[in-house]
Amino acid sequence: MSNLATLLDVSAGRYGERDFLVAGTRRLTFAEVSRRSAAMARRLVESGVSPGDKVALSCPNVPEFTIAYWAVLRAGAVVVPLNVLLRAREIAYHLDDSDAVAYLVYEDSADPRLAEAAREGFDNAGRCDRFWIIGADEAGETTWCGEALTGPASFDTVTREDGDTAVILYTSGTTGRPKGAELTHRNLLLNARAAVSVYELDPGWPDTHLLVAPLFHSLGQTCVQNASTLCGGTIVMVPRFDAAQALRLMLDEHVTIFAGVPTMFWALLRALGDVPDGDRLHGQLRVAASGGSALPIELHKEFEARLGTSILEGYGLSETSPMASHTRLGEPVRAGSIGRPIDGVEMKLIADDWTTLPDDPQVVGEIAIRGHNVMKGYYKRPEATAEAVRDGWFRTGDLARKDADGFYHIVGRSKDLIIRGGYNVYPREIEEVFLEHPAVSLVAVIGVPHASHGQEIKAVVVPAEGHEAVRPEDLVAWGRRQLAAYKYPRIVELRERLPMTPTGKILKREIS
Image (cartoon, rainbow, N blue to C red; front, side, top):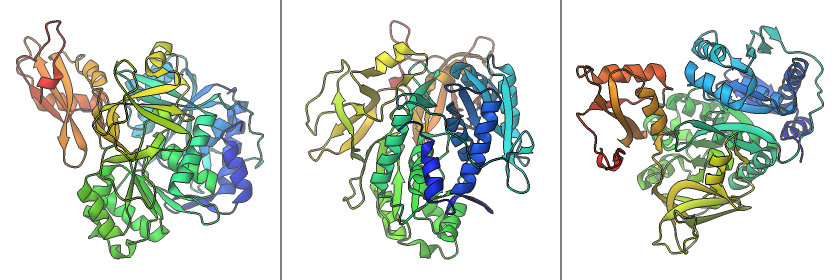
């Protein structure tokens, strides 16, 4: 294996005229995606992008993401996908931290907010000096700065080594500053193969995936996009999840695989009765897979009763490419279980000092993972990498127990991580932003239970002297302008003081 992008080279040869990407009225075959990505790769190289260079990408779930993703890899460069909800200040940070030399941005004439934030972030960044707009013209051609990308259908994919970085995915750490997890060509290839195994994908009987997980996220990118590329599957792209629309697309496109987060499964069930012919979906889905947080047993039962499919649950992180463990087709439902490790991956429970804990269903410890899926490291952060990885074992910060059959069950988190609607949110980053507000003296950000999102973000604020009249709703509105939509606190509570340790640390466990 050299370059991950050879997956597209091979599949374009095998499944050339098979539909690969479906987005609204647009249908692109494997051959067409290959041609367009080759043309873009050529433009990247002609514009000075060299092997190993970092190229940032801001794009929703539309064909241009997949075309650009494979183009950057074909050119031998490193893809740095950015969350499309990031604000300008956050974009500038990611561009600088990743050492991106170029920035590809999708522009939608109907909604220019992404491109506007991207341009402002680019202007405020340091080293990144190339800003390119990608989109689609009226003929559906992928364009770059308004010019259709045309040219020969072939491009000699640049050779890379298995251990070279292919993608940098940004995640948050205990410091609250996003860190870039370096995933290699080997990491991503073997994880795509793991998804093929878990979902039992067969190129001879290609599946149709409904893509609702963002492509900038490892679930959508590896387990849907890359696995489909490998197996010749069709991807029906949804830029923004809407349950009723998703159900209609399942019917119209005869979708057989759906992977999402728990909130999406709840939404599908709520919308099912309002979709004409929704009962025809019973038994249509071959695979339904969930990750991000545990599914209640009631959701398992209702989904299987109404749609005729059991939900598989998996576990992984950006640092593990992402898939680490999964339940399998045909296994009895074990509510709350994240399954057993995928092939080629080991998992164990450890104590704070890295000591391996005994296999005992009553023992709770932190999950550690070792295998082909573990990242190369955090980009430019050797100390953070050394803290997280020892002898090939990556410590996750997630607490779990292991039952007698080897199935793992998440019981809590050793970090302050908040998971809102499937998105990871780290309080420290939000706290640092809120402390920039002149009316904020102290702030503690916590997660509180939420019926559909799993957790909601709450900021407990001590007003600064002279600003006691500040209103919670004003701070909520301010946070909305500063932070991505999934990050800003919807709940702000004002207090005179916060519980502290003798050394001055806020006692979050005493805040609710």
